[in-house]
Length: 280
Ligand code: NAP
Figure 1: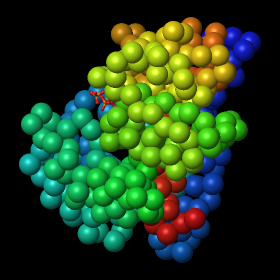
Figure 2 (figure 1 turned 90 degrees about the vertical axis):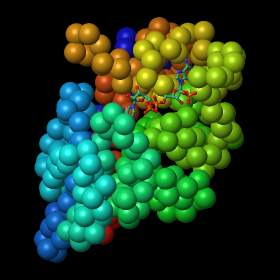
Figure 3 (figure 1 turned 30 degrees about the vertical axis):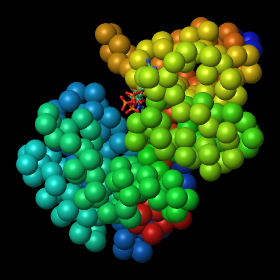
Figure 4 (figure 1 turned 60 degrees about the vertical axis):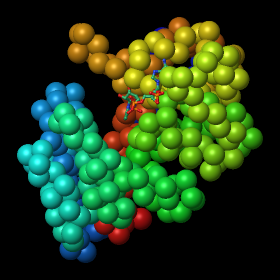
């Protein structure tokens, strides 16, 4: 993203480094007390972009002193493996990596992750608790949106937040977290008519769709802060968001892709794992 003089680039790398530093400290304390934090990532497909993501989490976990097991069950064994990890006292966090093999419904499997170990908020019970204002791990990506807004000092109370996307992993939990912070929240999706008319009303606009360039300058008013959650692979091996870079000419702030939501998401997954192990 080429930032214009009017736009602040709301980067995530500095915040991610600070979160990882605190997580490593907490992990060292737990390890010294004989309780090294342990994360299990269950991977059931050979999808290349997800393999890249899993390797990056495993590397960040190792650097923070978190033991990370990558478990690759056969499709028919995923539920059994999740239940076994759920019952294993030495495992503190469990991530079920998507996509899953064709014909397998993620909703049939995530209830097998105990909420106390559900560090990426995938169990519907975690989302229900979030909606009910009860303690739960939010999906790390949704929490990363809030963490970035806070880090860059963006006020939320009384302001209009528009979330584009209503998935269980990003859109819905992000909307609940924004509501919890007293924003007035609108959720848009593929059936929203005149998307631009809605998004132009946003003080804070969160794009979580998975379509490069969906959000154009026409969708953004001057003064809007835009959080781009989209991660869309490009033909040359790069990554672009959902927001057209030209939006930087109008928006007050814009997250870069890569280097915005992504690194904060990974750092929060590790923070959740340490918390699940009893850390601060
Ligand atoms: P998803 O499950 O495919 O959901 C996409 C949402 O976008 C759906 O609610 C869909 O509406 C809506 N949508 C599709 N086309 C639209 C349109 N033309 N106008 C308005 N809304 C539209 O995707 P997801 O898992 O939430 O992920 C969204 C993006 O975030 C992807 O690019 C993904 O790679 C990225 N992501 C990034 C991270 C990270 O760490 N940075 C983590 C997770 C995901 P319907 O509900 O009506 O179909």
